[in-house]
Structures are given as C-alpha cells and as structure tokens.
Amino acid sequence: MRKKLIVGNWKMHFDTHRASLYLHELTRTVKAHRDVEVVLCPNFLALQSLSLQVDHSKFKLGAQNCYWRDEGAYTGEVSATMLRGVVTHVIVGHSERRHVFGETDREVRHKTQAVLRNGLTPIVCIGETASERSANETHDVIQGQLTAALANVTSEEISRVVVSYEPVWAISSGTDYQNHPVASPAEVGRLARQIRSIVKSLYGKAAADSLRVLYGGSSNTDNAAGYLEVKGIDGLLVGGASLNAVEFVRIVETAARQAGKQQETVDG
Ligand code: PGA
Image (tube, rainbow, N blue to C red; front, side):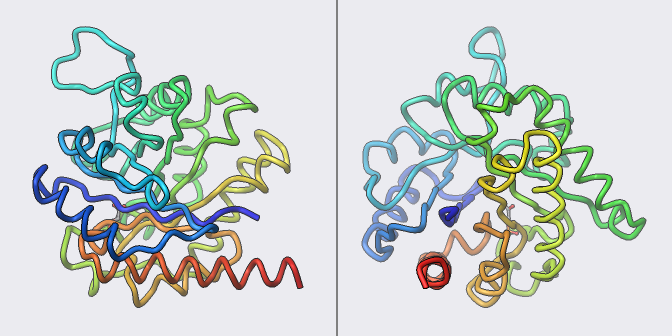
C-alpha cells in the first residue's frame, strides 16, 4: 500500500523565529502515524535550524526549490547538494516557480535530476492554468510537463519520485484557501489516473502502481477527506492551511483515518 503523504508548503511565510515556534506547536499537537508521512517545507533560511529541532518520528523536512548545478558561481542559489543532510524532499516546479519566476520545463527536468542525483526525493508539481483549462488543454499540459520533468529519470530513480497535480487556478494566494475554487475530487482522480498511465507507459506497471500522486490547491480540513478517499490520490500538498496548526493537524488526522480504512480493506 502506498503511504499517505501530507506536505506543508509554508512558502515565504514565517521568519526563522516564528518557524521554530510553529514547529514547536506542531510537534506538540501532531501525532506520529505509521501510515502517514508528513513533510514540512519552510524557507531556506529556517531549514538549517529546524533540522536540529525537528522530531524525526513525526516530520521530515523539504525544501521549496533548489538549483540544479551542484556548486559554482550562481549567486543567490542553493543546490540540492547543499540540501543533503538537511532535507529529504525538494519541491520542484511549483506553479509559483513556473509562473512568478519563469521556470521552464527544461529547468524542472534539470532540478528533478539534481534532486535524485543527490539522493533526495523530488515532489514534481504539474498543472494547467485557468486559460489552458478552459481551452481543454489540461491533458496535453500534464502530458507535456510530466514527460519533460521525467525525461532523464531512470527506471531505478522513478520509485523515488512523487508527483503533485496542482491546477494553477486552484492554488490560493495565502489566507483565502477556504473560499478559493478547488478541483473536484473526481477531476483530481481522473488526472491522477492520467499521471499514472503516463508513468506506466514510460516505466511499466510496477512503477506506476507504486508512484505517489498528490493534489495541491486550496486543500483544507473541509475538503481533505474528499480527496484522500479517492483511489489514486495519495496525499496533499497544502499551502495556506499548513500555516494554521489546527487546520494542518486535522488534515494529518484525516490522512491517518483514510490510511487506516484503506488498510482494513486490504486486510479484510
Ligand atoms: P494552497 O497552496 O493550498 O495555498 O492553494 C498549494 C500549493 O502550495 O501548491
């Protein structure tokens, strides 16, 4: 059974002090669940100190981005090599990287490779914009972005890749996550099937069956269960709601409940 994965993307929120206090609060309130992996992604600056504070039985740490060269004259960048030993996961190709910072499919491919080369897990984000959606281009966009990101990933490496389907139009800009449009669970389920079938055509059935596919876009306590009960959606990449301990803890609990139900079906 694929383990559920809940990723908290704190984006550019919380300075180092606040991040530390917040992690303390989460550590107090989040229970460790055998069937749920929880990855927290603070800003680069906070990562180092949080890596010393984090309770590894409850959380893993992830970076929100990285550069694809291992070292060199690249002012302002942080490489996957530098993240080794600090994080286990790196978000790659988040829509804000693509659309605010102009990151291309080629860069996403290089970054995915760099993360894997450095022994870390890439969480590769793909998703269509509102206009691509209204032009019925969602499937082509997903196909294009995913094949580009995986272009140099070997059949051994694919088992470490996580894919997050994140329709750009559904991603909140912070605190509006509760009233923001979201993709329906059925729609996300369809896209998760498409993602798995692309991976199947590239790497075979076993790779597709073990691939974890997440949804990201204004997920919160009210809608989390709806996604997590869809077969083929293995977790959530949570932005706005991950900044609120009460919300985030509930989402983790929802994932644990769902994992428990699925385990009963497997056992039963
Ligand atoms: P959101 O962010 O939950 O605030 O929409 C999701 C994301 O970071 O992809």
